[in-house]
Length: 274
Image 1 (cartoon, rainbow, N blue to C red):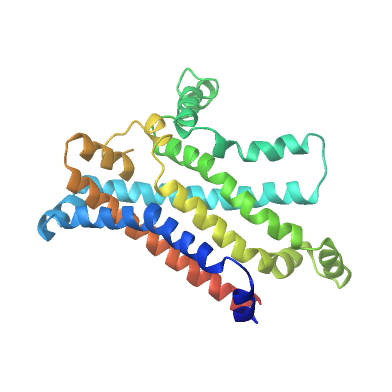
Image 2 (image 1 turned 90 degrees about the vertical axis):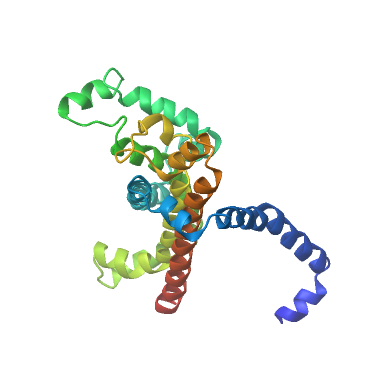
């Protein structure tokens, strides 16, 4: 049936050719160019560029902060998506529009706002700093801005799934004697699991390559608050283009590995929760 529909629908070959050309020019060619530039380095120089103590510290901070921010976004994003889908309240459309604000707001502006808020003289920093909470020029600051830029991906991924879950299913579970915890874990969660994994992956991938907001709030201190994209820019400013590309290749490999794991989890969830 799929083959018949594919032949009947007009423009399939043209649209497929356009899709492949689009992906080739905008995605494949830059990736190939990145790998070819890194390949100009002999293996010993490539390894020396990507395995320095400074680079390893940047990888650890970048991946760790991205994982933490994505995990926070999954929890908070699920709560926000649930409220937006299941409840009606005043100014709901305004709240729904605010979810998309990180999409429209330049990340550099977000970094400037966060840094001004959480410094010692800022609106929030004047209360947090005396308590020992350094939310500016610290790792906490990096996590905060990464949560900001990745938050909409989780909400917008979960909303369509929640809209398809009928509230009558929850009422039926309650009538059969299920507790609220059992309803969440055995009725709602199986339907949400693939969307949660996808939202986590999108938020993590977005955070992994973030630069504009982090550069303003982290302080960019090597071995402390320097993320991998900032290190890449530092190498470019030193005119070490091949070394910068080598570090970028490492990030690409990490991103690709995460996507592979996410796809495997999605396939597993479809088999388990089907």
